[in-house]
Amino acid sequence: MTKLSVNINKLATLRNSRGGNVPDLVKSAKDIESFGAQGITIHPRPDERHIRYQDARDLKKIVTTEFNIEGNPIPKFIDLVLSVMPTQVTLVPDAEDAITSNAGWNTLKHKEFLVDVIQTFKDKGIRTSIFVDANAEMVKGAAKTETDRIELYTESFAKNFSKGKKTESIRPFVEAANVANDLGLGINAGHDLNLDNIKYFKDNIPNLLEVSIGHALICESLYLGLENVVNMYLHRLK
Ligand SMILES: CC(=O)[C@@H](O)[C@H](O)COP(=O)(O)O
Ligand SMILES: NCC(=O)COP(=O)(O)O
Image (cartoon, rainbow, N blue to C red):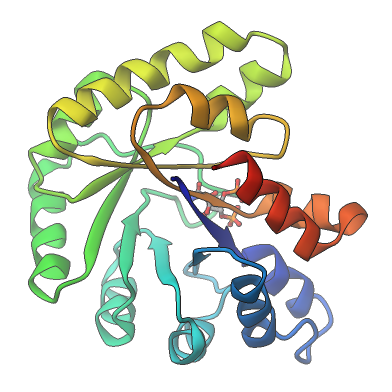
């Protein structure tokens, strides 16, 4: 089974657009869990344009499934994660001004830094994951950092899939997953996954443990309803 972790960044974007507390992230996270999702993901960015650091603290009190915090491990992010103690931290090399995540780690170039940060989190019992492109060398580099898992950055898969290039879209991901499995790394995936492409991705990636999905899931919910959409993903991930 592949777990669904719902990324609620977009709900925070909506809330922040008006000030106030609508939608209420704490209530939304509880509801999403009650609809069957097996995790909640947040990605606080340094400018707190959607998820605020306080949201991470508030959500920690009520999330009963898996709590995943993603972000670039700058000092204030490391401090936040260590104080909140989520189930999992996913390290993403995002630039401060990036609209969204747009690259995986160069795990060879940043090996020493990653080893250090990963150790800091693992010492506290927080599971670690590193966001990487579907590239065998980057996966091998990730294994050398002692991370528990990788998160495959699926934007290129989603783009090619939407153009009808199914086989081409999945090939590098299958290769990267095989390397990860051989090296004993757990495999997560995320970015631009949606109701159209998720089943094909899941069916082709061996031992896919978890997907985190936000942007498309919230957009699809505008038409189909949040509870219904969560269940549609759960059905496709069986
Ligand atoms: C790590 C990743 O893939 C991103 O999808 C991210 O978590 C989404 O962040 P935004 O909601 O800021 O685009
Ligand atoms: N790690 C990926 C994530 O949390 C959600 O990405 P997206 O579905 O918003 O592209």
